[in-house]
Image 1 (cartoon, one colour):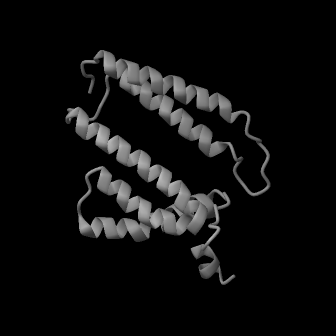
Image 2 (cartoon, rainbow, N blue to C red):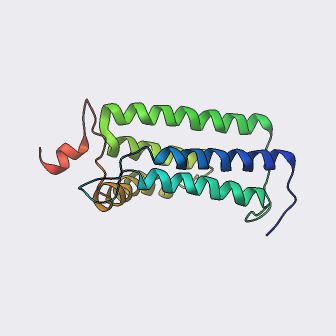
Length: 159
């Protein structure tokens, strides 16, 4: 449903379109050839396109319902929390591998976005790594990042 577009939303929409199109164009620099299935650039380019498309929807003033605005301090805290989680997640992937890092990061991210259901967070702990592993590493043939200290895939695969 179309809504009233203010300057902040318009600027955000334009930034999303510009960033999305820039990332999409940068995706052409990734090699197209891959013997294992999908081209390595398929996922980054799809993500970039979606960022641009969401920015275009923002510019059109389309959203799913009323946007509740919190205080600036609350928004800044959530943003800083998400940035900290992102950095910790990348560091964790490097040391303990994708599955373990994702098992902890997924419920933490959901909690930051307001999910407080204990059952839901526990389900995310187990289901997110499995679902993402099946989609990306099995379905798309992307190689998972392995941990330097420990990797659960080594245990699961018996290495």
